[in-house]
Length: 148
Image 1 (cartoon, rainbow, N blue to C red):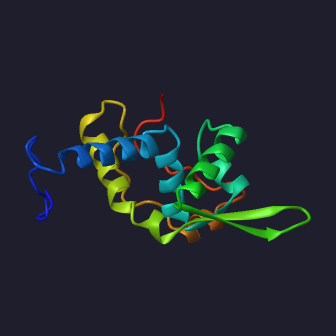
Image 2 (image 1 turned 180 degrees about the horizontal axis):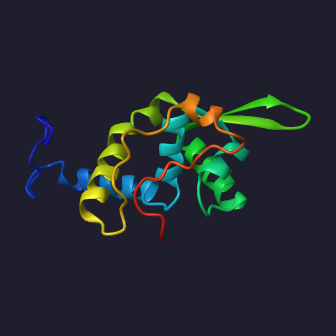
Image 3 (image 1 turned 135 degrees about the horizontal axis):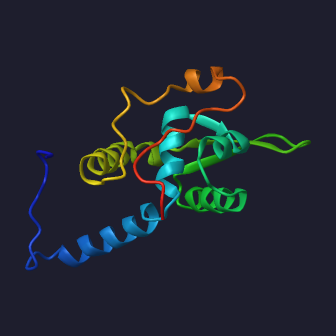
């Protein structure tokens, strides 16, 4: 456990605020694909749309596009247009998005320990260089559950 963990009781004045923060975090990270997309961007640092789509199992183009838009609106993902014709974009985490890495890691660790569908931990996630060196399609980083 973290050494800066503080007890929040129902009598504490910030208890309602704490509940609201947890609700907002669950709304953002509770979406099936958001943590997967964020973790993929943690592992690859920067990715094009097609690379992200190829790396994430079973996500539709529309769902990936909608999710990236939402994550961009929340200031977690940055979208940079690389070329106009044809339109090519690159996605990366903002500083705010990178701050979620410990939370994502904790979610993965907890899932591996407590969910029956979790796979054993890989020795380490692939680096951006490993992903870009692969032949054609970057490997999917499998973190936690993939079912709904």
